[in-house]
Image (cartoon, rainbow, N blue to C red):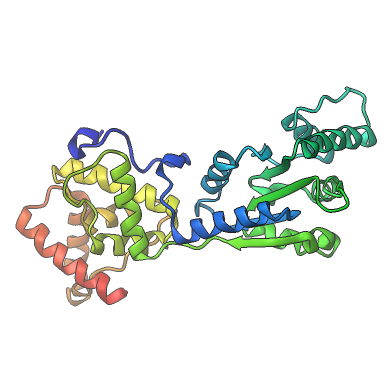
Length: 319
């Protein structure tokens, strides 16, 4: 691959959430602050939502890694569970033993006993559910009933829900209004702007071991913003492909042309507008030029320089 070419130890733009690469985007930092404040104050339900690829699972894992010893955590990564399956999953995470033939009342009693033990040890139990939009309605109601367990002054279990915007639509249903009223803190993750993308890709390359000259310039990051709409996951995909293209050409810097090619090859990416000068050409010659650009990667350096300037001007015009 391109590791040696760019002087890095590992691939910097993988899709697996890795807290070692956590950058601390303003939106991510604010979400962590909201979660920390809500958990410290003992609130019952906390909700974090964001579009696909905005970093919810990464924040979820970072929260799990950074919970201090005063919290006992239970983590449900795949919540497409029936009410009985959800209770069993929560019990398992809290190290509660359940009998095979136990009913709902027995489950609730044993979970409550465990939560009381946790409280007596001066700790708090927190249930963290990722992809919460997948929770069936009846399981959401079962979850609400589980959180009814409380002392005179505090809930025995707090719940953090991470989900896509569909989670907001789900809990807006009239039959789930009781749960909606119990969500005291919520936060919606935002996409990145151009400057944040610039800092983000530099950070990931640095963590991967890069120490050479700049690979992604600000004009290139403007192109990344257009093609990704600021979604971190799509930025990762495009950046990885752009590095492959740069490596294939033997260059140590990524250009707007590389981002254009990467965007054409990515389902989730958006098209980058064509340079205006293409519209001045007669239709036949424009089509021939585009076909040539799509089939040839090794363009002479003087042509590449001219194209780089033209696309940069176009990106500035679009912004």
